[in-house]
Structure formats: C-alpha cells, structure tokens
Image: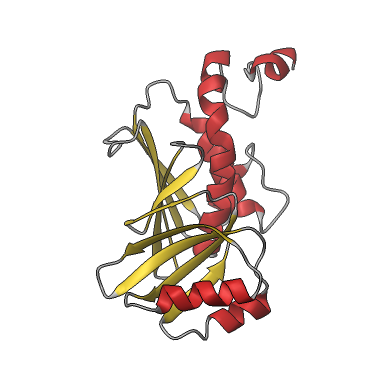
Length: 222
C-alpha cells in the first residue's frame, strides 16, 4: 500500500496485474483518457458486443493491462456500479462483450495512438485518441477531429453544404451557449461530422430545437 501511494507500483496483489513504479509513470497519464473513452464508447454503441483496442506507436514501455481494464470498466460501469478494473474483463464476458487487444503498429505520426473499435446491433464506431496536447480524440469513424472527451461535447452529423454551421452557431448563441472549440471534418458522402465543445450542458429541450435546423442529420450531447 505504501509503494502504491508513493509511486503507483502494484506488487503482490491477488486481483490486479503487477505494475512497477516505472510502468506506473507511463500508465498514469493515460488513465483519465481511458475513463472518458469508455464513457464515449458506451454512448456511441450502448449495446456493444465486441471491443477491440489497439495501442499503436511507441508501446515498449506501456503496460496496457490496467489501461484496458479501466476502459472496459468505464464502458460497462454506467450500467452497474459493480464493475471495477478488478472484475471488468469477467463482467464483460458475462455480458457477452468480446474484448480483444493489439499492441504495436504505426502510430500515424503520433508517439502513441490509441484506437478503439466497438460494434453492436449492426453498428460499428471507431475512436482514435492520444495525449498530444492533453487527452484528445483525433479521429472519429475515420474523420479527423480534435476534441477533449472529458468536456461538454456536441457531436453533430450534418449535410456538407454552406449555411448549416452558421445557423447552428446563431442558435447556440441565442440560447446563451458559448462555443469553446469547433472541429469539423467531411465524411466524403455529402455529410460532415463535427465535435463542438461548449462551456455548459445543453438541455434536451435545447437539443430538440437545434435538431430542427435544416441540414442537421443528428445532434447529441456527450
């Protein structure tokens, strides 16, 4: 317990993998990101059947075991408080969630790149994230975006044509909702995805009004 409190090292524990002090330093910065990505994955695919995690780039010093467990526990924890990093993989198996992992591969220009693919109910969503300039999602479903998953995020799919973004901004401003960051990318099929960071929660009533803007296909608060 003293070692864990001082350095993050875990040794002699019967229900967690061992973790050296050096490995804890590498793992520690990733832990908040894993928690937020688990929540995001659960919102994108609420009834997931498969989860594949890829740790790409420079991974030689990264102990992925506690990170994967934390991601799974966060993903499942919204449904039950019984899920922890200790029992996450057991709970996943009991709920029919198949978890797999790949370590290594091209980081696509990033020192380390985390890739998550989650599927369920004929839906497949992909998230790519890194710690570049803090916890960041850098791609969603193959579209380049840039947002902190731990903030108030509006995820929007819209028709890729002039005027839609302007109308959304005007309506958010009229509702007193401040935009902190706006990240947009074309999907290549006449649509675009946007991650809009706002400074406060957007109510369901406000979302319902925003969805009536011509050209908005979907809009959700995360």
